[in-house]
Length: 70
Image 1 (tube, one colour):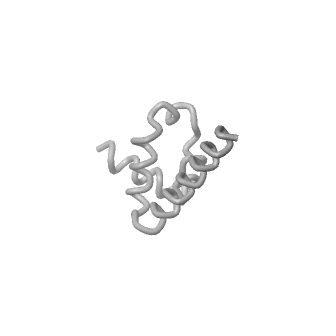
Image 2 (cartoon, rainbow, N blue to C red):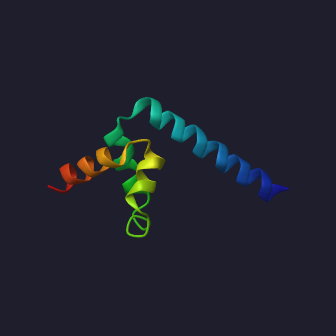
């Protein structure tokens, strides 16, 4: 039961954090936060999935990546 409660607490916390990100961060801010928090996943996850998770289009994500790499 303790494990279930801890897991539920973690899921709700992540849900609230994600909703706050959509309200308070720009598209670029959401992408940068995802990149900083998930560096090990980036080489393995296709950009279309990252764009879906962060709520931006694939083309916008490409522009953000290009802007930040220059």
